[in-house]
Length: 106
Image (cartoon, rainbow, N blue to C red; front, side, top):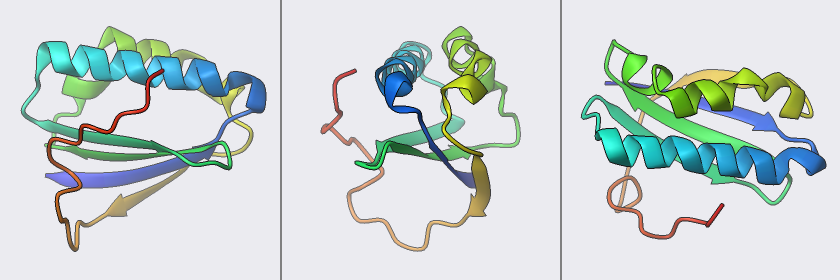
């Protein structure tokens, strides 16, 4: 499984919309339960969002979801700056990436 870290700022007026669109992606993932995807999204107090995406070679289990397409459709207009993407390796993980129950409501 390969991992990517994606980080971007969101305009103040679009933070609630971005959060709601992310929540819909998680609803779709919960419904479809793809085993080839791991996904974590953090919202920083600076208005930045950080996505950690783990997926097998076929990314369509995530990107093919209608909710993800809706999230992506006007993403550039919601951002306050450029998006950065980096390949990442999990070096350590203690109870962070499995069964996280502390999800912020949309």
